Amino acid sequence: MGSSRHALLASLAVAAGLLVSSCGFSPMYGSHGVAQGLSDIRVQTGREQVDFHLQEALLERMGARHASGPFTLRTESDITRSPLGVGADAAVSRYAIGLDVDYGLYRDGDTDPVMTGTVSSEASYNVPRSVYATVAAERDATERAAQLAAERIANQLVRALQDADSQ
Image (tube, helix red, strand yellow):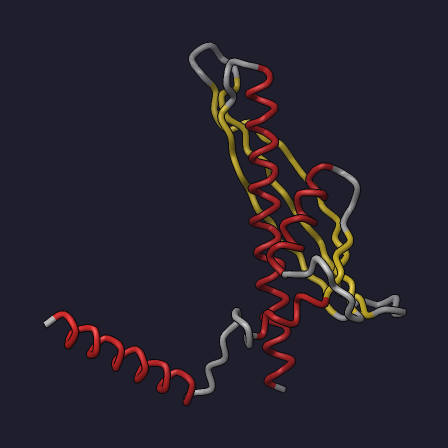
């Protein structure tokens, strides 16, 4: 009974794959996905800690650690820290890290960007009693906000590549 069920599920998976591919579907990610083009884009960010986290997240997300293509992604980020919660002792007990990133995709030698965009992300953290723990919690929230911003940038770039491929 188990093998016939597995055979049925495999047949359904193959049929679904054929249906999806026949309607013009092309995967965003994977070895032949549109996102594969991101691996040739170099990444330039600022010099702040959040920029380092953003650059690392973009390089990882785009698979662009050894990029050598004709495009460079340049970013400018603005980070904010806002209190969210106040405890019974009137001290702030939770903060939100807001990250706004403006980016432009530049072809080598050009001064005007091929594409521009803006993304926003946010991550929050609790304020522990220990100063060291607070610093670690804020750094972790900053890194999470940068990772979310990088994911959004990569998704927007992939959509732009898909639009360019379909024209």
